[in-house]
Image (cartoon, rainbow, N blue to C red):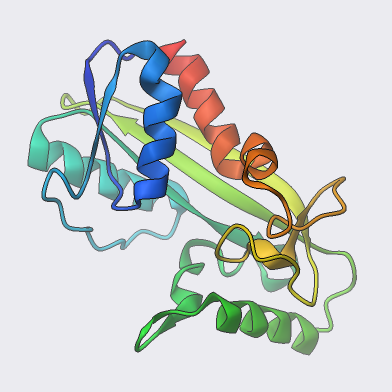
Length: 202
């Protein structure tokens, strides 16, 4: 496992929430976090068929464009009764001509489960894969998995995406009902980031 000794890290996302989270997590280690927008990066086309593959595309594009080490993630929900779908296409299921509509995506997902007559509990996992890449091509990969089940109707208006229909294992609340601190303590992204910090920073 390679230790991160550099002072600047490009986080390959335009999501300010993710950037703020990474800045806070890495602040104790003296690392300056730079976002994709500040670096003038566009989002590359994700053409791989796995979370690792798509995270690697984003990390490599950022490294090549800036010469900085880069951290990229790819994540989504994988539903067992749908053979792992939507998986890498999680955001695609919400696409409309006018942006993303996750209420529509959740309804579409539940309809597919009903058509498939999927038995209860309708188990699923949220997955997050992080790829940390250096300019010399070395990479470290971390994956966080949050097991749970899909429920209906949607519950809670916190969180985002599919959070209102996902109930983590051994919990009585959906991610959409949890306060941010509770969700962030157990989320798939938090699990991946903890591995990253323990492996390369702590």
